[in-house]
Image 1 (tube, helix red, strand yellow):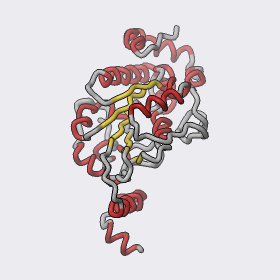
Image 2 (cartoon, rainbow, N blue to C red; image 1 turned 60 degrees about the vertical axis):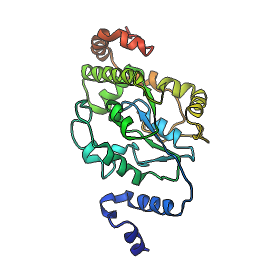
Image 3 (cartoon, one colour; image 1 turned 180 degrees about the vertical axis):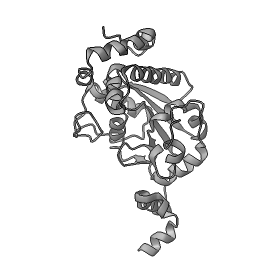
Image 4 (cartoon, rainbow, N blue to C red; image 1 turned 120 degrees about the horizontal axis):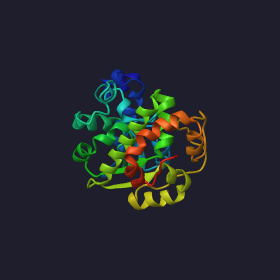
Length: 273
């Protein structure tokens, strides 16, 4: 069996724990008789805004293949793309673009190409949407955003950012999503709040956006990381997260947010005074 595996997949060592997934994908393609027109589905979301939960939800459909089924489920952290996309400090640098043709070719080794919808969710993709849309035919995008105060709490706690830096990052994330909404994309937009409190409505929206996306299941518990560090049913954790911010942190955040009140209002958020 090992000899067959190595014959089918001579470069298996560089793919580490993904090597068997890639080899299995090759076998599936060899025996599949389906003529599939793929749709590439990109979740565009800043970190800590619910993208892992959304990915888990969508991946309950049998029509979907993830390019990375492990941990945060990000294509940027795969063995053959992370040097380009992840292992440096310029992930969020809007002046830096990537070799998307190479990345696409690599991701297609990790995806199960017998599935019609190929899903990817690396957060920095949100600052390179135009380039992605040029290289990936039939690309579809879900734009996800979250209450910026809840976003700040995660950035302060998880990334050890100062309240000021967290606020600036959260604002930049909203700026990019506003720009992305104005691009000529096949896209839908959803807030974390609607995702978690109006899940069934969102599932209906998804089915209209991607009719191939059948069998999405929102019941049960999801393993996406959260500040409670446990598997949970879908629920809105914003209030509990915001309650973790002390008044001094809120004051510093508001100093930054106060200068962009119109941006907050565009996404239906208000300053917390």
